[in-house]
Image (tube, rainbow, N blue to C red; front, side, top):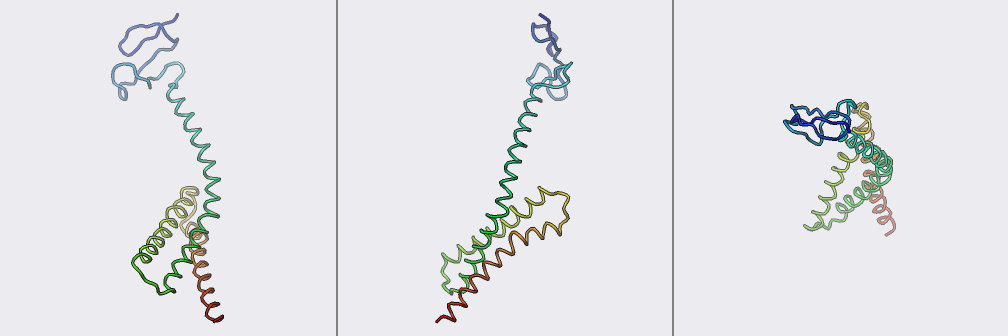
Length: 163
């Protein structure tokens, strides 16, 4: 069998490569992340590369799912948010419970517009200018929110004219 040398200089029976620790990072003694000379790459490095590859595949799958989230779930959420917020103001039924629920609904719409639309587009397309990102927020957040408000306004107008 061939021998290898650990950081302490003792020879042990083992693989054919020599383990050379980097004292700046690992100090004295062999560690799991010691660089195997000859191969130029440590086995933990290969394990990390495999994890990164798996993470990228999962991220790509989530990106595809994210397009569904961005194109379907977010506009529906903003539409219903606009609907119920304006319905609250038009109903004139102002209780503390309803007021707090509407405040939370409004804040969740604002947070979703920023975190899940603006920042998601910013991360997915870092080369896009700010104006394009704002158009995305308009398309996925503001227009559906306004459409929800318009829908409840139309329902109130129809109810007024029907009575």
